[in-house]
Length: 356
Image (tube, one colour):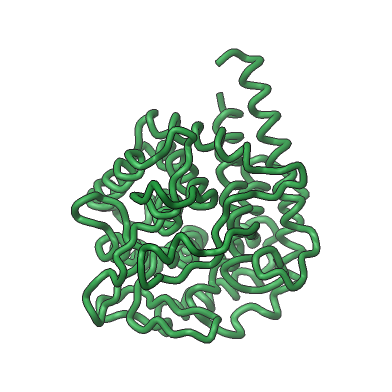
């Protein structure tokens, strides 16, 4: 790539990421997918992405937005302590580093202790996937939990150099990989039912794979020097990445269910997988082939961002569905997690290109 092409790519990505960010921060009150002023996994993914974007690109406006958002919404935090609504707390360690405000450190410590000592667990010791909605998934392990809760634990462990919490973050990551990884393909199933001892509908859902593909190298980076990262984690991740690479389509995207080519292609899962590839490469886990695959995804995703910054092709909230066919019937509309995962992908490429 010539210097001119390099500069043009970075500028295009910066423009697109700014549009995506600006749409996320507008007033979408009452819109479940886009209302950022709630305390749950949807806005949580959005706020994690905005902090990531601000920190990696030096965008102070984005970082200030995160601070203001937490101050505006913190009274909603932890009213219902469930694993799936822990996502926004992942920005607290960085907020404390930036502001030195004790409230962020104290609240993060409270949430970390709740996870360690009170959060519901399955018989294997994995966090049970509890949600704010009026629904119970007793003894179920979902891939989502690694991004929504374990990422926070790893970041808090790094901030405080707490080896007990670091060990828990590592253990949860390993448990989820062991329980969800398909021994035949290396890809991940959406969920595991500990009571029944099965993967329920046994669907290799793309966004489930994205949550873990993205979060695992982030978690490992935070845990370096606090606990020993086992070779098994590296090996499992490489098997996962290889399986995903084999399912990538020529436009850089993945279908909403990995091995169902007759299903729609899904943008949020595709962006999360590609972003994970880039961050795992930076960690030394994956070779350059995966960065090239991620750039194909960027090309595909860029065509799905309209002039307002809205990301198309994002499937709605998806529990473990009863059949594989049911995954293709999920409604499609813009969401903060779709915006956020795309923003994280664009941010990763901007940061990587800027380092050259």
